[in-house]
Image: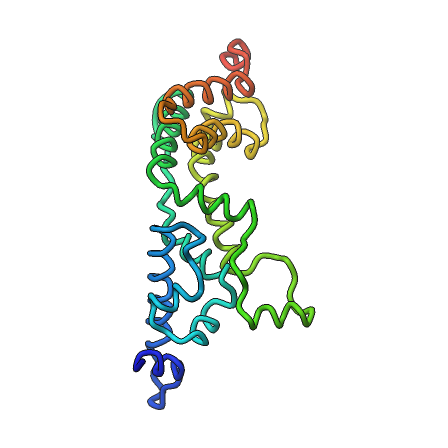
Length: 231
């Protein structure tokens, strides 16, 4: 109760110094939301459950996160690990296979990334806070992403793009590949791994998926051997 009452007055500091309480309350909210997300998935991250875990006032949550979606997006950010990067040396096929094998492990061992993608793609159904609902009814809000959701979306896009850019931007790739759309190429390479993970098949062979995905990509976008060898 004492903590809750203190949180209601956070941000006020008669000494002129920066009040540390807002940062502490935000950290507690994120810690509580992340713990719920890790153990129970997005549906477990309810406003009431987060408030109980963080022991802060409801108004404090509103100040830090205008909607439940913002809170959940911020929690996802803390669970997504860095993306695997490809080896710097080796043949193009070997570098792609090594990267895709690392992604296979990444997808299998860190499901938060796929969960966040599904949440962003299929609809964010966490209820907005009352303040946000009032704003929408007044016509002051639209359906665009909030800052927290946009940041999560951009981070996931960067997570996917950076490892592939490291390969596709190389002189090696320029010599051996024709022009292609990178988003399509990433879907061709990662699609089989994501599908295998979502299939929940116990005997799924990720290594075979990697081999087929890389061979298929090179078959579609690789230059003919004679053309690549004469440039």
